[in-house]
Length: 118
Image (cartoon, rainbow, N blue to C red; front, side, top):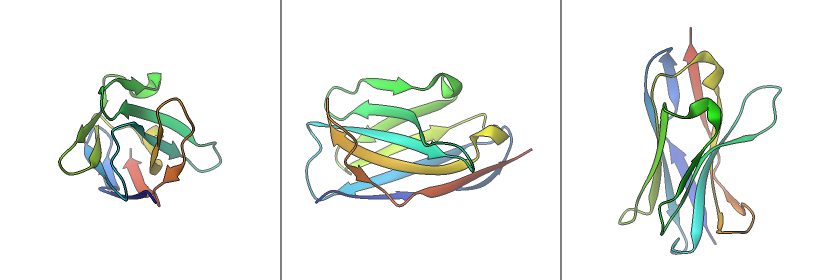
């Protein structure tokens, strides 16, 4: 069973940076995609970025393009989300997710709070 554990959230001023980490265990991720989602109060959960574990293809939602970077470390089974130039509207709980490429997101982390003050 896949387990995902996020870390790295916190409080930061607008314009600052944070790096989120998602450590995966329970299987190899060679046929998987990994994603970062976020959910702000009163809003639906949205995908922020994703990466295919083997090929490295990435996707970003328009609102974070040029500011966020998703990457993975194969040796550590860990996915990162580097967030720069943070804005108050980036405030949300951020979740890591995993799923087979072409399938659905089947495994989720517990979430980590990111708060950006103006």
